[in-house]
Image 1 (cartoon, rainbow, N blue to C red):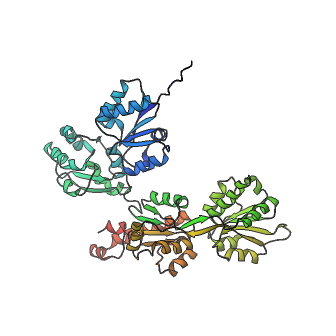
Image 2: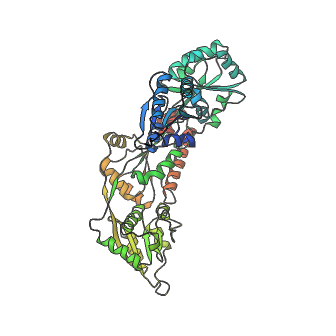
Image 3: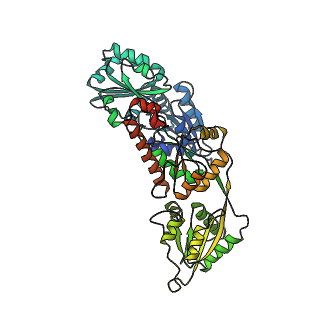
Length: 526
């Protein structure tokens, strides 16, 4: 009888880096995606764990590390012997923790296959995010036991260069006393950074004498930077100086639609909160779409005009139902109202013939759409698949240009369910620094399901139609980009934030305190 060999699992000790999920190495990412069991340390931020869980296997088990190094090693070894891939996820670099080194030693005494995946150390990584270089003699360490520090050596490092230590906030007083006792000048510059590389990272600068008081209120792990590099922070700080850093921005779009916008907002330092205001449903009767798809295949149309990503999705879903693909668009030209819609078309392997170069709206498309010519256009019909609540502007304009228009309901938009009570309260009380509206329907529906944004909230709209609707609902429009697109809308909001910062910086201190300007930009100057 042939005996089936039991599969052998692997063990990986993975460095999570200083906290920003974007700083995970590719090898760390691969190990986590392939893991059956992930044991994580308390120093790994919840924000990073959320990202890791979202990308991990559906059946992967996540548990906090508990017990002595030997206990954790036993759990890892047991998982590997059961044929599972086990990961111990630690903050910073694995070998920056004495306890993890002991775990690796315990695993190495067995036959288990293991690897150690380096990560950016917390101390060094956060120092860079705080804008504090570590020139000259540099010492960076992730400290577990402050009592074991060699303060004489640290004092030497400070005297000849810079120092960065990741410690618990409760140990700051012990570090101060140790540095002073070792002869470090009490006036030496110090930076203390909390939530390093996170959305709410904050750095306070002071001196060795005063940094404990300056860091009052900090909790958890913090990074202490000491020495000449701290003095360069004013010029080199980049993470906390991004235009929208710390701004809570309301994005009234579905998660699928909000991806690009939220990513751009995060790149500028904002904290986006996605609140769906509409839900997309199939048309009540599918007959119109059935005839439209048949007409596409039979060559009934010269053009298909897509006005939204949802319209593109609806047509392709109908194509899939009938076993059709992009080849059945042969001979039909495609126009898209904007770049986001065009990208959705390109995702199916088709390049649109027309995208407005100017205003990306119905008027912008009509301005560039050629009138029907019976000689050049033997087929004079246009398919316009769109939402049930679409305006007549586009269809009417095409008809004026001599085209026959099949204005087809491809999908219905219905108002989404109200968001949780805490989000509704934040909207009405000014808990959001800005809101970004990408259509008139997002304005109407947000007000309908959650209430009107507070007067202190910055209102940014994608184009003139959306601005009109916002004004109708009593909202003050602060930001409108010259070009109607999601990237331009985010760019315009970032530019507006920079303007606010410059205005506030130019104000006398008394005027700043009395200024009506709200949000993180204002708070930094008070």
